[in-house]
Image (cartoon, rainbow, N blue to C red; front, side, top):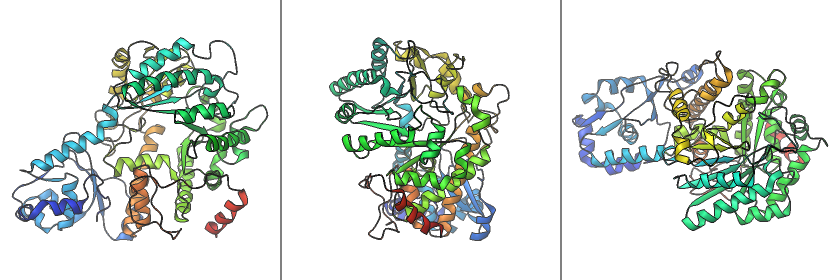
Length: 560
């Protein structure tokens, strides 16, 4: 059974290009080398094994620093272990698949060796090309008092914002990066409360990038309450994207993110509509933070994103860093409770997609990218060695540079041990700081004793920042980072197996599209997806806010 389509070189194309000489050599097993040297069975639901009538094994294959997966039956496993002439019993289709994933290679094939090196280069490009994500925190000022906020808030006063000199130094540090594509994200607080600093940084960076022919993307994470037409005009000129938070329906959102006027939801929706009208229709993305109050209404949360016209939702648990720890007893929940909530959200999202209304879950997209695509998305929190200080840096309002967003949150509670240096220090000095070497060593899943036998240790490793925040009671296996990573891998793998055994081509197309951060193409039949991979994302649907009654009518059909 072929569970994955190889996105780098489709198996059918490889088979066509191998020629009769290679196929003859396979039958004679004269020049085939088996390149997997370790095998680990990954968790598959027993119910699926019983339903499909076969025992499936999922194998890891390393060649140097490369990795791939394939579903194999017991008999195929025995054939591969034995090697030799037994390989002739495998189907031509199976041999082509295993060759495309470099489980099998022709000893004398120069082309396959080049293909392998190109594939390795593509997978590691996002992390080895330099610091690509630069987070600038121009101010800590914010008018919200979110109960799960990881940092202290301040509406005004000295010491809570960068100076003009610091923002210019931060911008200059960004430009020292060798990454071919730069992403600059402004966080807070609420950056729009200091739009003057945001504007200064964007103008400084974009001017230099234009002169040097470099590509830069800007993102501003904000509540959007302060957004006005002047800001929109500036953001449109510089192609700035906006990111905001929508925790669900108005009542839930306003409870999680209170403001003095108790209208946080209404003001954010106003900002979303203004941005779509004045900047561009796809100018705003949103994410939601799960709290204890969210757990009872997963379908309502997803439906709210549909109603607001979003085609992506990022479902993330409350991060227990900084000041959020103080509210963990009232807002926190067990991992099992979150996982149940997340599964129900995914079921609802899949249901909406089958109605012809595309919406993607960002976290699932990351894990599908890891398993289905040869091009790593570079997601910082899911790397074999942490991306903190390697692919991301944070320039904080306090004048210091941190290796990750979580490490600057720890500083707010007094733990300043994760500082790399002052804003304005040469980028090469920040990257060579001993702290960076320490973080990378602590997060290497291939050598960490608690991760050595984990089947997923190629993809991720321990989170050293979470370890420092937790203290002496920390263990990798019980950490949220580890539990969620394993749960997500198991969820995606089992869902793919289920879809394959049921010939659910619609879901398989959805999964491969999500792995590439796109949506499947839909045919004229709004309920079915055509089995084709889009070369570019389809035109966005209407971004109008749909009256709640319209969503309710459609949703009722799904519940019937």
